[in-house]
Figure 1 (spheres, rainbow, N blue to C red):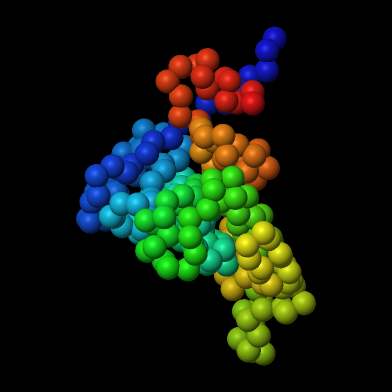
Figure 2: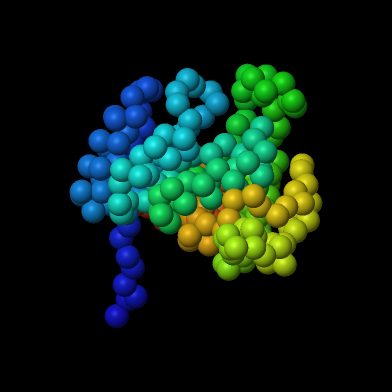
Length: 226
């Protein structure tokens, strides 16, 4: 008999910009009531709108079971802050956080930050892979029992159970350790959309979940096999 595979259902709750948290909360609750596994919320520097990760941090305490996966653009963003923000979402959602890594490819978006010019997609996805790598290392930089919270002695953490990561990537270095305790999941779920070619190596190396946008089953199979 062929091996059974699990079907995981998800929904994108983005669309035209809304500035009312209740809009996203209603959609997330609808997905939760429909027994979906997770919701995604897209984000981009190229269009106006609320920060996806911050919105889902608002949604988190008002939901119970559905996973929460915001898009996080790794280009022009400090990897240490990415790791801290996703870890925080995992804490406030009680272990239901993921993040969908994406890159920023245009010169117009680069000018918003004014720090560097746009780079080729292959280089940006190499950097995104480095961000995923160092985020995992930062989440692991606190051992599970590093927190003491001993009011009698005034000790909050056992410093021997915090570790440097000393990561050196292609465009950045991170020493660590993290400032947010180890997330409830240990490592929140990393998602990458591998529809375009440059993203596929990063997805193969670093993603727990790979998204593919396809119009036919054959197209999806071809991308998966590649």
